[in-house]
Length: 114
Length: 113
Image (cartoon, rainbow over all chains, first blue to last red):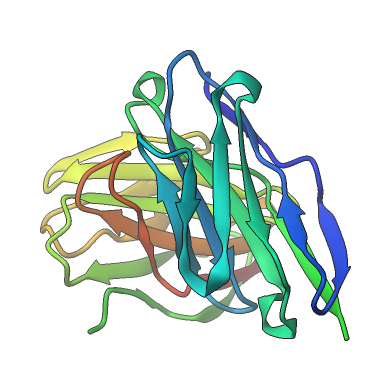
């Protein structure tokens, strides 16, 4: 069965600091990979996605993610965090073994200190 | 530019009552999904549909029912509400599973007392 692990429940950073949110998955083949952001009281919004090709993908709001096949990881990064980035972040994976229905990690809550 | 619309936004039910959570999308997407979100647990798939007239169970279907009579609408039915169904429910749609991202509604916050 497909699974997605986000090992950090909470991450606290200072405004202006860099950020990395971790995501690991377990599949046999390269899946489709997504990062979503959820602001309080809102639905999920797509930040970026990876299907194939260049392993470093750019998204909205200055975010990027790098796919590392050898580590089964798809970590999200941002060089300088803004207070408005405080939100819940979800990694999602879709693969043939799950009929391409996305499976979500449990989420990482980002707290930004001024 | 509505996207995915969920109603109601909030609801309080008594144990044993029933209700229907509504979800409609205007993007002509074939795939629609219902998730529940509990604190620290991420999103769990309840049911999904690959097109009008076709539905299938997800990871946590017990206590819920769905129907898909049109491409636009995908209601979720709770027949006998239980406290364990207190959660935030999200509906999503996509044009194609996997390759295309999902579009989410703003959620329905449901409390069972």
